[in-house]
Every structure is written in C-alpha cells, then in structure tokens.
Length: 282
Image 1 (cartoon, rainbow, N blue to C red):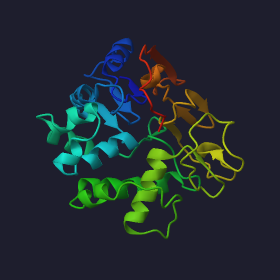
Image 2: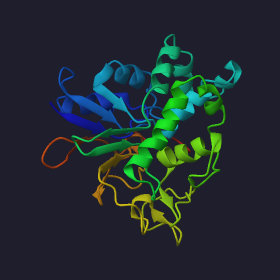
Image 3: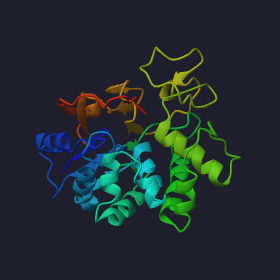
Image 4: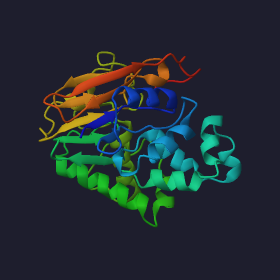
C-alpha cells in the first residue's frame, strides 16, 4: 500500500498518465491525492476529470482555484458558458458534464490523514489558524458546496475582498475569505492579508510580505502540509511544508510525492509543453 500526492495538473492528461505509470500506482491497494487545479490551460481537462474520477475512492482531491472557477462558470447561462476557452467548453458541453461537475463539487477543500501526519490543501493556510481551525473553515465551505446553497456560493465566489480571514466574518464574506486562503494564497503580510498580485518566487515580493508559511509569529501546527498552486516557487520542502506545483503546464515538471515512507520521496516527469500564450500563473 502506498499513498502518493500529485501536484497541479491543469489539463495535462498525457503527463498525468505517464507519471502514474512511473510511480507504478496500483488502484487495488494504493491511494492518490491531488493538490487541485485539475483543469484549465493544458488542453485536456475533460480527459483529466474522467481519468481521475474513474479512480473512485482511491483518489482524494483538494479543490483549487481553477476547479472552483469551472464550477462557477457551470452555473452561468449557456451563452456565457460558450464564451470561455475551448478547453473548458469541452467540459461544460460534454454529455457527462453534470456528473463531472457534481463530482467536483463534492471534493474536499482540505484533507487530513493523521496516520500519515499530512494535510492536503491547494494553496495555503491562514497564518494564525491552528490545524483544527483550518479544518473547521474547510468544512464550512464543503458543507455549502454539497448542500442546497451551493449555487449562491458559486455565483458570489469571485473577489479579492475580504483579503484577510477574520473570525468575525459571517455569510458569504466568511466563505470567500476562507476560499481565498485555501486556493489563492502565496504571500501575505504579518496580519495575514493576502497580496493577490504577488506571484513570483520568494525574494521578489514587496517589503512587508512573506510566503504564507514564513509569516513571523504564525501558529506552529502539529501536522505536515502538502500543497500546490505556486509554480514559481516550484518544488519546496522545509518548515513542515511540501510544495509540489512544478509547472507542468508551463513546460516544467509534473511531480508526485510519496507520503508513507520513512522520508517523503519525490518522483517527477518532464513536460515538453510550450507555456500557454499570454497567460500568467494564478
């Protein structure tokens, strides 16, 4: 039995299949975790969704910002859905679109395995959250996405405000603040206010900003965290953080991390893709 986690796929189906073959994944006994952003930009999002969904309970997904964006677009009028890029249109107008979108909507925001001592999240955590507070914030989002109020949440999903989580927040502002942390955070200030426009590697950010895992005085958690989202950070292991978005869609690597050995083990395959034209990392 083995547990592997795979970084941001973003529609790169061919690389995903090659990586799963390389790690010799056995769906009869092994488990796959995914850091989110299954879709968008790689050209094969529909194939990725069908492939990952077919693993059933052997696949655990933490939703990313691109995944939530697709769900939100799926709630718009048909004519609005027709305006998105061809790759996402292929998903939105597929014969199994409702099945795929409902499956995505019922994935996790955070997954925790205490036996492995790992938490899975797409982007990051609010610096002042304990492990249990992070889990509670994630469950609030998951319950709304899986319940009758999911359409209202998806219609009000987008926005840079609130840009900082606060326990006094309520309603949609509270949910959006948590979503921004879990799926969009890279840099923040000492209070935890997110700098959405800062996307490059550490050392390039404006003064007063920190990678979310290096904020002074942040809570010392009792669990290791594996995440993606930050392709310009690349592979990173330190401070109890394992970051594995290695930029497959940008011509980089698709990375897997084995979680259940004595020490986490990285395995990666090189992509030969050209970066999507006119796009920046997000």
